[in-house]
Length: 217
Image 1 (cartoon, rainbow, N blue to C red):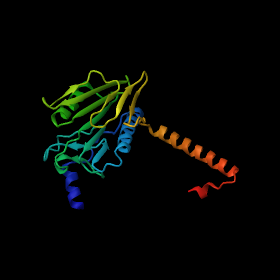
Image 2: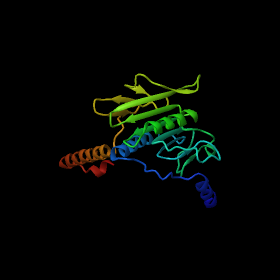
Image 3: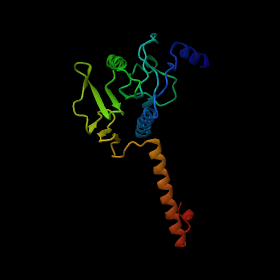
Image 4: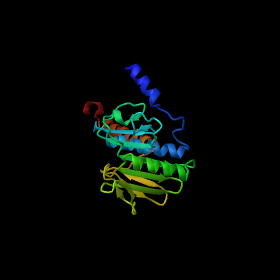
């Protein structure tokens, strides 16, 4: 197994030498979307979610590759991977891809990314520019087999993911099908702290009433 992995790493490297993110904001968005999607599909063993993972769509063509900021693959099991080598994944391409624009993105580079995702079967392509707070969405027209832009992105609901996108004056909010918002890491920490504080106050009240909260467990 070790030799096989080593051979794959030689043919299909797990890194392209590029940084995962070019700014703290860029990184935060990647983590927020990846984490939100992992949480959404945590109970579905056949949905694979990854951030900044190299995708090789063509066997024996390692020069053809991209590392989407976030990608979602339906029909593939969860688990660690050094890269996403499509011909070893039952030939299934990522259906949903997210890119977060940064100061380092150039028009030519974004055009190349679009062409790549169009060519290799992405069904939903989301690009968020956090600097200008602008969201662009493309959905594949199955009849014509090409990605087409969505004119009205406000409150758009992803056909594949079921999540909703809301643009405010300041930022982008993403909501799960149950209405809960995707949280940043800091917001998750704050939420946990608030929950622990509430539990502590409740336990204190019980003790004042002569009830041991441990006996309720």
